[in-house]
Length: 128
Image (cartoon, rainbow, N blue to C red; front, side):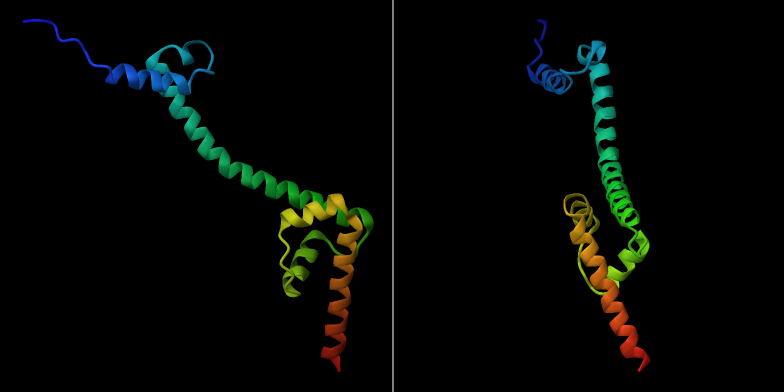
C-alpha cells in the first residue's frame, strides 16, 4: 500500500497559529504546542485586562476629580459633589468631570457653586 501524503489543512492551521505568535520570544513563537498554550494565555489575559482597564480608568477619574475639589477648598468632598450632581439631575459622568477638572478647573468650581446655590434655594423654600 502506498503512503498517503497529508493535506495542507494541518500546515495551514499551524501557520495561522504561528502568525498570531510571531512576536513572542523563544520557543513561544517556534514550537506548535507551546504556541497554542501561549495563545490561550494571551487571550485569557486580554479578556481579563479589558475589565481591569475599565476599573483602573474609573479610579483615575475619581482621583483627579477629588484632587481638584480638595485643592481649591470647595465645600464639597468628592462623594458630596457626586451626590449633589445626582440630586440636581446633572448628567455628567466621571470621565467628563475629570476632563473638566484637568482642562478647565474654573468650570468645575462654577458647577459645584451652582449646585450649592440650588441647594440653598431649595432649603430656604422648604423652610417657609
